[in-house]
Length: 334
Image: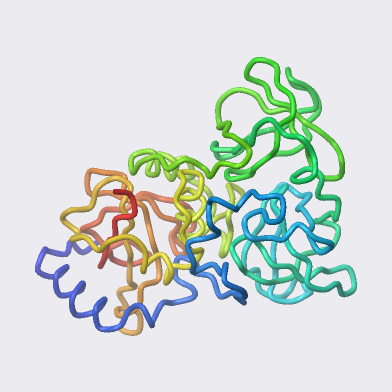
């Protein structure tokens, strides 16, 4: 393993990154997304206005009209075409709204809350959106743990949903620290204890801090790499950054290229916990291309989901790893 000195990093940062790396982002490496974006809420935007993201008419930019639907699976794949052999371009979580554009042979073409348009199996969504709109709710419950079980009763029982980090539910009842929430398909379930936060129905997710963001990312350590994955069942590097930032109140794009344009540029020597670091490959054809992103965790280390590593691992900012070498960093928390 080659140790790169400080002058090498300066050359890499100024000679490679500033020479046009924003336009040369790989759609492989650690797993950047190649998706069909549409509309003003595309995945390279900051996301919907927090003042209206939970209005009666729109939820995270998805209109609550005759085309609205909610995801019924724990996590479901969105494909480039109506075929499981086509490319997985992103994933959606249970109870997330989507807007149905068209239906074709057991598939639905949908727009997701990140603005990505793709195809999902029709059986994984429901046009009954009463779990997210049209009822009286007391709180919104956000899953902040890597995974949280929704049970049939306040003290346990049958598993209703294995909710992934970032999943949101609307509560209408509670017993102490247990909350009864509406689920898709007109059912209910209970969440209790740690791994969730409770916020007012119409409020944006509170912005936390850089240390909390880094701690959130560390919860995924050891998770298998999955290109365009968004959950503990499999995740890639921009997916890790996106979902962990989201539950800490920061809306980032779902692509490496988009994430590379957010926050402020900082020197590698200044990287702290919660800062983003960007890697390029080390081969002749990869040296000018950012292909991976990670989250600083302090002590000169970062956590990332590596395609070549095969799982979420910890890297050293000043050393190469199988997925490349760090050449740039950005700060997204003040």
